[in-house]
View (tube, rainbow over the protein chains, first blue to last red):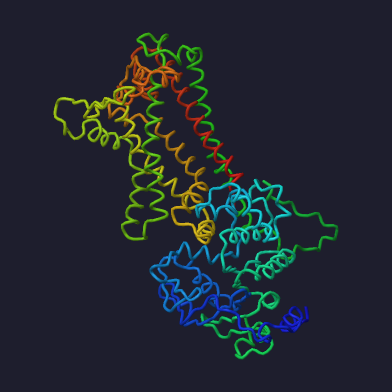
Amino acid sequence: MSMSFAEIVEQRQGGSVAVSAGVIPAIKLSTKNLSFFYGETQALFEVTIDIPARNVTALIGPSGCGKSTFLRTLNRMNDIIEGTRHTGTVWLEGADIHDKRVDVVALRKRVGMVFQKSTPFPKSIFDNIAYGPRIAGEKRKKVLAEIVESCLKRAALWDEVSNRLKESALSLSGGQQQRLCIARSLATDPEVLLMDEPASALDPASTARIEDLIFELKENYTIVIVTHNMQQAARVSDSTGFFFQGQLIEMGSTLNVFRRPKEQATEDYITGRFG
Amino acid sequence: MSEQSQPVPHQSDEQSTVNGLQRTNASRSKQRIGVAFEFACRMSTWFSVAVLVVLLAGLIWKSWGWLDADFLTNFDSRHPGEAGIWAGIWGSVWLMFFTMLFSVPIGIGAAIYLEEYAPPTRLTRFIQINLSNLAGVPSIVYGILGLTTFVRMFGAFGANQKVLAISLGFGNLRIPLPLDRTVLSAALTLSLLIMPVVIVAAQEALRAVPGSIRHGSFALGATKWQTIRHQVLPASLPGILTGVILAVSRAIGETAPLLMVGAFMFVTSTPGGIQNPVDLLTNPQGVLDAPFEPFTAIPIQILNWVQHHKHEFEHVAAAGIIVLLVVLLVMNASAVLLRNRYQSKVRW
């Protein structure tokens, strides 16, 4: 592992980085001056960011820098925590997600989330995937079975579990459980997938599978991934944002952020001087 | 005591030392305290086991020859040889049924509210503390409460009892007002008695469901109600049921509150005249009448026999206690089975 992060990106993309092609991708999610507070503690400071559609955006930074908090504001999962508040705006395709008329349930169906620790429900594999469509009102068995099969296939899990769909999801291995959770969030047919350190609890082989999966999924989904693993960011992402002490220090194409960071803090972090 | 290690045999000469590892008086006395403590704990355990064994042996010896099929299916009698616990068994069955009917839905509902919905205000904390206190209130206090609230209904209906009759097609529901000394009064009283226990047990079961399950559900676009209905409740149900069974098994052995609300000592009928499970289907009027009839219960009958001046009733009482113990053991065992069965399925 003596390759630099920039080399990892270059090798992966063969030099044809999206930015250099001159194509400006559509913006899926954006925030303006987003600040976030846990009670009196401010966790995010005036974050302004544009997240391109059908791209993988990695958010990196040291522990406690606010990257996970930021991720959870994008589908309003922070609403669940008592005593939190925010200022600023988050847009999903130009619509303010904090607007009073917005149904948070509908928002979370469009903006799915995968957590750091795999969290399969204590139900069968089938029921785990079918849960989202079911609570959305889908009752037809045939439709549910189709959704389960296609989601498991998209999450590269079908071959391993197709003959044991009735078994408990908790009987799966850690890596399989995480892919199950990805499949589960695909079942509500989201446009955006938020991933909060999806591979941090997995072994290298499982991590590689998840990363391959992320690479495939960006064909159809906008993916935002929080990771503390910079090699992972370099391997899977198109653009990278560096968070530090609740602020977005730098955001740009992954190649540029790793090869020519504009800010000293970014460079210090990437070269391992802190963090 | 495995801790008392022997010095390791050393092949070298006498001048070898243990380099500061040698025993001192201080270390010896510390070890002695450890041994004494272990012994004290061991004795505590064996003492309670010994008491239980003596109790059981005494009971079995006393009831030997008295606990037979006739004892189970006979009504009470003035003759020790003919006395049985049939009325008590049916009384207790009806009590348990109605106690669960009232306490379980209300208890689980309250627990869900407190755990999932209630804002963390002072009022919530006040309710929480009072629930824990209520769980420790002596049962006789609940008996007095039941007497004024359900049996007499605060005297709101005057001296004469009124009967509210409702025709249901297959029979008439005849509700006496006030409720008087009936199965329903006692069941309501027992419900109040075990409700704090049910609520606290259900709260603990709900709290044991990891937050990740809730978050996972919310993230898939589930509403709070859907999350509770489809994830939290199913996952916590074994824990809740275990708590309910243990609470009900406490209620079934209660004597004091039943005495207060007027359980009858000597009864030669069953509530509604229902004497076997088939009657529940073939005698709808009996089922409707059962909650509003006088009753006795297993612990009440035992109390009656213990107090009896005829010496032979000692043996009848012992037989009754064994029946009660078996019922309790079966309930506790089913609680344990339930827990183990689901624990192997539901884990995180």
